[in-house]
Length: 237
Image 1 (tube, one colour):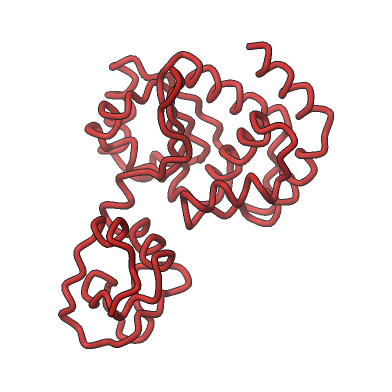
Image 2 (spheres, rainbow, N blue to C red):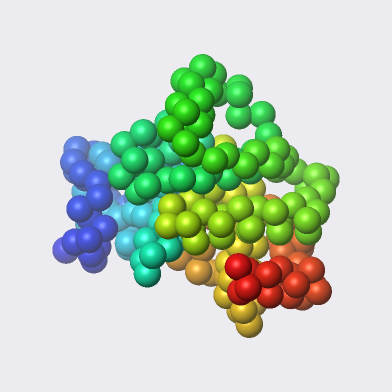
């Protein structure tokens, strides 16, 4: 008998067409099994160990690439906060349904994904969406400043206070976008540690994982006077 919850099972169809008894996710592509080299969708529910494994796999699926993770839903007059990869920008239905008014692109070089992505960006702009391009590189050598984190957080907060929802993305929705989302949580969740904010994000987006340099940056930022000043500014906003 499967130990998966109905809520998670409803998000994906598991055909059971392969007889692999135990799905073991690939380290870099969580929807691919290292035992049989088949996608998780080809397995039976009984082969999946738990909800967490299935949710991780869904994020790597074609559907998961287009639909970002909800960190905060819309509530009390504030817009929601969504965290994902670049393909979410191309999901016009999602942008309209969730009233996305602000987009933070944390990644440099996304033009390599071609005209469909670039057209989607222009389409979003023409519909009135405000876009902040940060052009961060996902390397341990690249330096992100505290000012960059503050600028990103203020942009996100302005969007949410105005009642619109905000999408934060990088290429995949793993490292650079996690840096921006976690730094925003640090700014609005006063008294909450980096570890707690990172856990909050990871609960909603399983692949969220800033690279080691970004993690060190966030730990230092969480203890900085710069963050304390920003927290006061956002309270007064």
